[in-house]
Length: 205
Image (cartoon, rainbow, N blue to C red; front, side, top):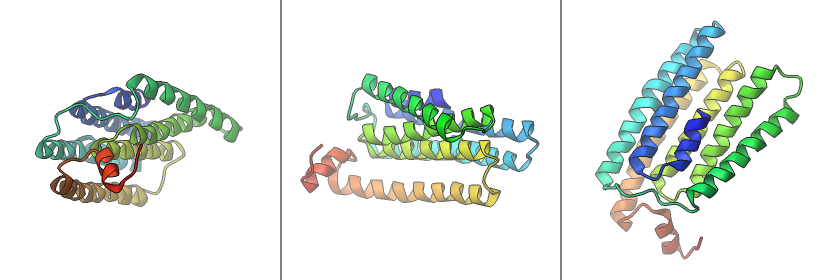
């Protein structure tokens, strides 16, 4: 999952971003299924199924259709270059490791490492929201953060299943709201590049 988070920062084409996010979500489903089997926690199989179907298939396909509908086939708009974004991502990964070593002293080493990995994925998702200007890639960054949260919850003996289900459906509802929002932006401004929206407000980056 950490590798796919870096791959999200590396990709320069919209279709590749969506495929990479789907790969990350499938990896999450496999990780949760492994935790369910190795820890004898059968309820996590439901979480893995939700992650696989909803975030590995439904959401990427829906976003791809949104991209096709809007005619977005060009390269992803970036605030900084790929090289700089990857370097910052490496620094954030090191920061996550350092923080968990300090905060989670006395915790089992595998649990600490899992939480550090999840925190790094969350930070990389947040970084993607900062360094990408397109609204679609920003929502992918947000959902990548949510993948990290699910991984952290699984490693920390998990959230109650009802919370996981509610989060999953909340993400799905948010996706449809986002799609309507994007169509309205495109209809009004003929673009979904947030830099253009900043210019309309008189802001500068």
